[in-house]
Length: 389
Image (cartoon, rainbow, N blue to C red):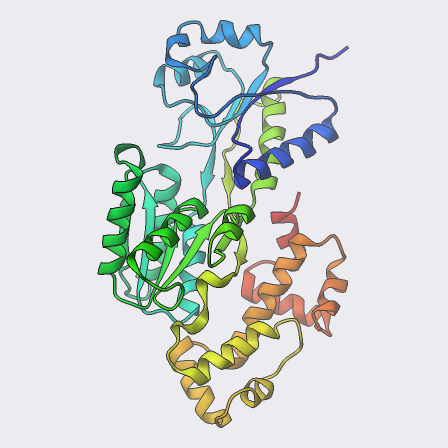
């Protein structure tokens, strides 16, 4: 009878990202059969990962009868090398930097690029990124800055050295930085927790969100986003899918099915818009009203004429002003927003794509598939396979 694998989960269930991964791991374990789990605090303050236990790490892992680890590994190079030398199965989420010799969960620069594109589409002319001095934040920042660089835009940057300063000092620095920024400005943060810090700093500095400072986070942690006032917009990532793939990879490693294993990657699935990124950054009220109308009616088959009727100016005047401010025509913007609605439903609904399309008032599934591919780079079915388990 085959031994039941026992997996150590070094994940923090208080965070949405880690909960999403745990759900994916559970999905795989359920399909695979009985797995046993032993959850450790990722703070590395307890055995078997505390510094005083480095020398007998493998003995302690064997005493737990552990077969593999998924999650955050301690920063100790000694511990990392022990795991690598003894080929102990592990999938890690790197914090400070990647760990050669172990399967890493990478960050996709497209996360930052999507954030920059979103804020630019909202009409902002000034941009900033607020992050931390670690691997995952740096990659998100690079994606953000590289995207804006293609438009000859240089965003302002703030890096928070978390472990080296007190909360009070960090908050004071944030307030000073926010007050120094040109306004209105769109700011992307490295994650939702940093976004909430920014909201508090804005309150202390007397700055209005989103009229002066618009804030976009990452992770779509619904608890954090909902606790914030105003609620936070955030980029949603494929945490559950990565959790599933991490468990699948670990399973292969435990039974030595392969010699080499590919790294995994956190990718953006879309943006959940809330009040922290309002479109009032556009000073032309007619264009702002047109964009509001499009966003509020994106589930209907609206036309340019419908948008014009929602404003008080002529179609020609609106077309010219819209193109100048937004960078695309009204019909192009309608198509983009409606395809984004479709993409969101495709990965969050179990219904057939044809039914989802009909519910969103798309009449020709073949036509919408061609538009989807043009906007998203892949077909609706490929998109679902990429971001769903």
